[in-house]
Image 1 (cartoon, rainbow, N blue to C red):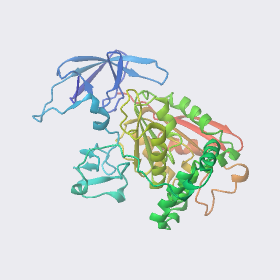
Image 2 (tube, rainbow, N blue to C red; image 1 turned 90 degrees about the horizontal axis):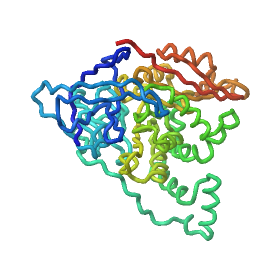
Image 3 (tube, rainbow, N blue to C red; image 1 turned 180 degrees about the vertical axis):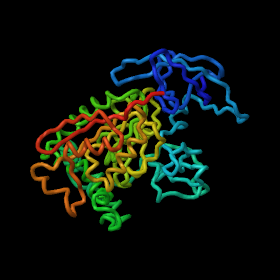
Image 4 (cartoon, rainbow, N blue to C red; image 1 turned 45 degrees about the horizontal axis):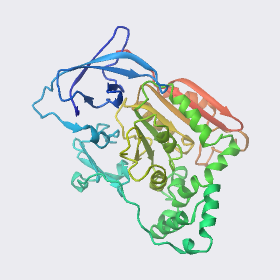
Length: 428
């Protein structure tokens, strides 16, 4: 079976409306297996065939109206591009050029190249694509190498790991969710290697630069996040359940790509991957040190091949450094975006939410959580404080002004709020 890129014309049954410009998430049933056909159609190399497909409407396994594809032969003389099914994850990337928002011309282990813009973007240590504007390079500077899972470095045990009873103390630390000796030593080596990154850059807004510190990134999931409970945050497992329930209300997200924006250490990215409800989860953050934490945790949870897993049915986890106000995705391309405890840190939340609305396809869902200005937080988020906390009414106004509708909120005293909004469907 081959995957062949061909022009597609959609003929819907009566009463079913599909906008031609909509990048619909569609599924092709083949031998009881469900494959993502957003960008590719498996037609066994036979052009002109008619393939029966279905459109998914939710995460509960229900199926929507049946659709039928009429496949037309390519109109250009350019040879048909063929990719083997086993290479689908490596071939079809969810990201796009942050300059023109069009798909990359080439993605390799060294980075991504956009020929129309004449620029390339590097891959950091074979771990994450750096799709920030400041990282742009000349195309010839992007190495044309294969994407491979980075092997775990074999570091010689340091002083902490040589201490007596270290196995006992590490076991206790693991049970309490505290850093173990190997993790502390790895942080120490990073700080010695790049001591200037310990201090936040004075050129970045304080709310953003705080999380670029290796110390903060290391501590975030190892204690910092627990302090959110005092503001009413119900804890990662319950927050994940609430977010999943909201995401299920989106159109066609099952088996598609989910963006976890401002993902931090990947606290929720990994939970989304483990759910196996999505073909790909993109963990996006501006902080390099946070993405390194995502990489460390993902290797522990899923193995070194988490970006292109070999196990059938396993969700791929892609790491991307990106600007929340200039998202590296095509317009109308994503079925869902999640941003947990993040919007209060964004330097320009209006631009960021407008970008999220741009990349969502009609019927797509945006789920966010943040702090409300209640209790001890009432006096914060004002004046010179880098963080802005939002009332429910302010969040509803913000999302509506960015073109998102169907506002729904869950609150928990004293200051927790989670919001779900949708991008409206439009007629063909």
